[in-house]
Length: 176
Figure: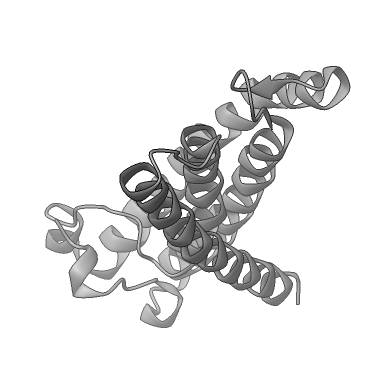
């Protein structure tokens, strides 16, 4: 049940990232046209784009883990059969939990500071608040940790039972 809720939230964030990408396309086109035709670019475009890229990356990270689309190599794990793949996926999930856990740990305090202090990026005509990007980094990382946790549980079950239905088999395009 909780895994299904996580899947729904991750897909919702995927849709949100798609909307942001779509809107950024219009912003960049307007900036280019304004610069070329009217000699007046859209103010704040660099700040908005840089913040949006961070937001997009962390909105998509949970989906990448959940769908098995994170980049990995199976050169060694494929040589060891089902249990070898399950063990490799378990270790990969644990390392992912540790990595994104460190991101959460290192980003939580700056997120609170940005919220409380009203931290902004940019100077002049448009100042972009930093707290949305900082909140998305923390919340996106939390969803990644949860997704990796579910993968670790599935891999551990697969390792223990030697049943292939618990091992996540990513698409061929994600292999290196």
